[in-house]
Image 1 (cartoon, rainbow, N blue to C red):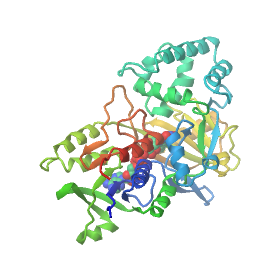
Image 2 (cartoon, protein in one colour):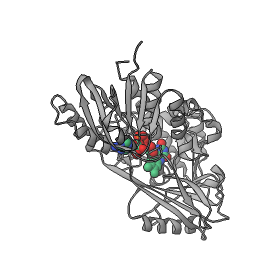
Image 3 (cartoon, rainbow, N blue to C red):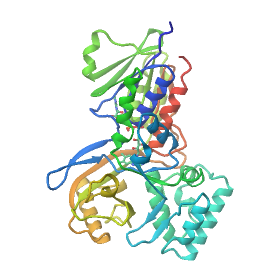
Image 4 (spheres, rainbow, N blue to C red):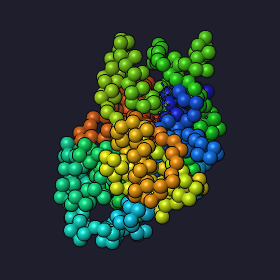
Length: 444
Ligand SMILES: Cc1cc2nc3c(=O)[nH]c(=O)nc-3n(C[C@H](O)[C@H](O)[C@H](O)COP(=O)(O)OP(=O)(O)OC[C@H]3O[C@@H](n4cnc5c(N)ncnc54)[C@H](O)[C@@H]3O)c2cc1C
């Protein structure tokens, strides 16, 4: 009888759970080790308390998915999540509280974009013509540009109003990197896949459930039903190469007690963030024959990061005209978007303000956002609920960035939102990488 290949996946974020599913479907026996007590990594549920003392279900950061996230949607369905009810699907909208901005109609591309641009409120005809002309030029060039081009340079023919009210919010929400530092090539790829991938690709998919319920928790329930397991509270400290190309994992936490009878794995997939994967690979670099791990570790360690801050605030009567609005942001009013959780998951009066590429300390950002809400939304009575600062939310998606590949060593692979791929750090980039990593193993 053929013995199943034994695989360890280090990290139970969206990439790790996607990899665990793909390894399992390839007939391998999978154990996922997760350092935290919960699964989901940078897209997970967190518990909060409303000003009155009642509990609130929050996320470590408000997320948006789009219709073009086909791999995320496939995996949700596979693990039993009904995407129709778990996500609110809306045509792409970048409207401000005064009703100005872009809202695409529900039509097939490119009609939706053409009509949406023609009808955009508050834009001069010069803005609209510049956008149509520039977007046509991008399409004619196959949505490609020189690798060193920034989004700001790419969009130089556009008007200042379009930069402030369309490109800047779109760029910072998709790449979490300001336009003058962001990769034009990756931005064009996101535009191509969202606006031209087919009907609904540019739709916004707003979570109606917390991020844990949306995929990682359901995946962690799916895995044991298919012969695998997820061990939480287990941080992997070191990888030990064994004779015959096998691996032993040295960790802290409950499974460390099994040190007397350590399990040997045929293959390890690192699904932890780049800095942790880099640390684990570096630990191997001194071993004879494993110098390539040092080169991979060095490549992973060069990535820089951008923060995202989410400010949750509550007022009994707070309700937005739409589930999501764009906000005019400045240094003193830093939020780019606000979400009405009452219209999404029924937590009435709860708003989530998103500050992408955020700078500054938690208390200062929270105060600035509450002032911004009072000024731009006429919501003076908002009480802060919780402010989550994710300092290393995403890698800085800069022009010409070299990202580490999937293969670290024979028998050792890596997946995650930062691994070489077409997308910026997103849920879709993470799960695509997770699914792909299982396909690159030849044995088993
Ligand atoms: C605030 C915020 C807002 C965002 N908004 C969006 C959005 O709107 N749309 C979108 O598409 N994307 C968004 N993103 C990006 C998206 O969340 C990430 O790209 C994605 O979650 C990354 O998944 P991952 O599995 O690659 O990594 P991670 O989620 O970081 O998963 C890695 C896992 O490894 C674990 N781990 C680390 N070290 C070890 C170890 N030594 N041993 C065992 N386990 C370990 C970690 O605990 C973690 O669970 C946002 C991110 C943040 C932080």
